[in-house]
Image 1 (cartoon, rainbow, N blue to C red):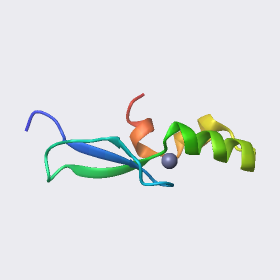
Image 2: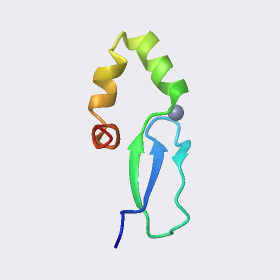
Image 3: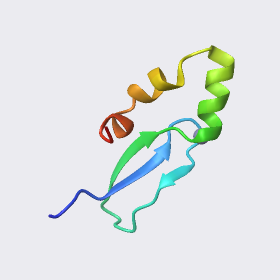
Image 4: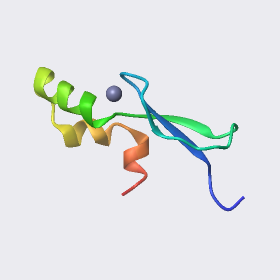
Length: 61
Ligand SMILES: [Zn+2]
């Protein structure tokens, strides 16, 4: 177990952001650039705040 395989899909449009060939890969949710921009424009939410709520982005820091 060197690393944790992970597949990431956009929580809004289900677009696959990170595809892992391992069928047993852990599936996490993120957000694609298109949806992030849309949400940011529509809801006036901070993109950084939005990303901070997603564990996948938090784990990258
Ligand atoms: Zn999306």
